[in-house]
Length: 288
Image 1 (cartoon, rainbow, N blue to C red):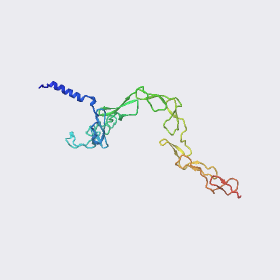
Image 2 (spheres, rainbow, N blue to C red):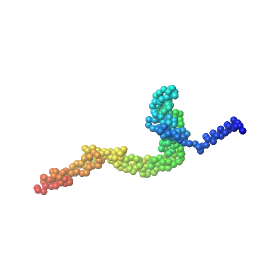
Image 3 (tube, helix red, strand yellow):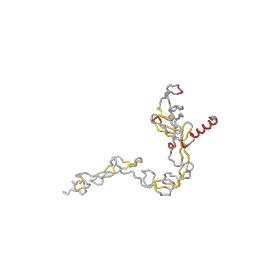
Image 4 (cartoon, helix red, strand yellow):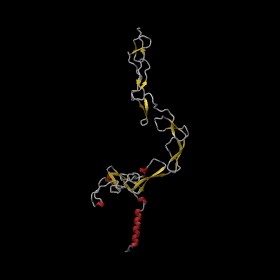
């Protein structure tokens, strides 16, 4: 029988390891089989499984563990040790612990990484690339310019031909003057127009000019504010009319009201006993 030499055995072992471990086609999702103890959701940075845990639970590697005291700490010889987030020591129930209150430096005040995925760092700027990078003490967001020279949209009606610059800003040229725009404000009226410098400025009458029953404008609710009931919005127009007051709820003057029918009045003819008809007219006394 042929005897396998040590060199031959070593070659076969190396070949076996290469065949089983270096084939990218056989790589698996790092979160495969990781259930975060049933108290969280696994996500990955592309290399390691990371757990986002339910309230009351904190990540510890591939698991979620209850927050608070930890029993049987290795360094404490199975004694019960109180764990404190923020003491600068990474405990079994913490992802990190840098001992400061800066949530953006890689480790939050809850002793979890500042980010886990690039999606956690999305800043809404199409001219930057947002990444979640491993840093000293944890994982932190990093943002840098991208797509330099490519078109973008800065959301400003008064700019045109916007492109990303080399510092991650979306910059455009001013739109022509009198281009219609909307500055997003209610109380200064609409529509608005561009002023040739890239700004959107009001050109219309405001919807809530102060006067009558209007006391001002509320930008938060896009409504006109009413004045109090002591304000006269319509004076009496004759002997059978009465002055009308704002009702304190509406910004409009209430319907015109008149003196009740039978109210004494004077039509100016010199004959007494005239009476209002309830519709604003003074009816003369024809018996004189």
